[in-house]
Length: 300
Image (tube, rainbow, N blue to C red; front, top):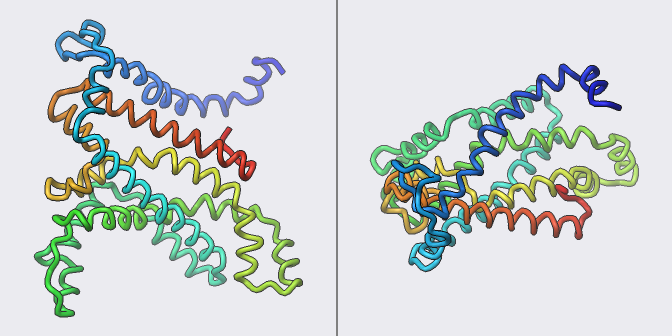
């Protein structure tokens, strides 16, 4: 089939695809050329190409500095906790919704769980700060009613990871469960009937029919989640953290922001950001390779 024939048959689909193509070209591929800043002593007035070439200077500076390991530890732990607890939560919610027989209640739960996804990170962070405020916060009022003193959660580094992970789960659990609910609709109903004839209860049907049926979807999304584990969303971490919690809250993306945008050292920030991208690529490539060998499911 020639290109002209393909265009005549699917020109409407091609036209619908153009905005998506332009988005990725402009915002994803063209900025790749900016990584050259990591290898130059970038001067805002001279421009990228006129700035002096310094090679791996800023990479050596970062690897030999005292900030490397604390930043890696904080980034990895925050991403790991979010992966362990945040990845399983949508699967559990999808399974529970799939088992509901009362349609009205099911739709109500779906709507309520989807809504937080459409709330901006600024609003979510503000809500968290207000709820956990030591002076009048809802949680501290509950603690005081039980005879427990108020706790300044937002100033305690030990609480930051728990607060971040729980807020992420609350915000995205409903939205991320949609793809699992879609995968559940593809399971052949006759499999449940056959399992029921064999004496399987609802729990055994979930274990032996439902979970194997959506396992390819789970594997693919798990690989993608691993790839983004170290590239944690900058906005919410930045909004929830403060100098008092930097011991556990300061991650690579927030450090890059303070270094490049606040400190003006764009080359140093670009070097750290490039290092983060390389580590993420290694993670997703390794996870994809292991998944292909172990389960036969992979991204490529």
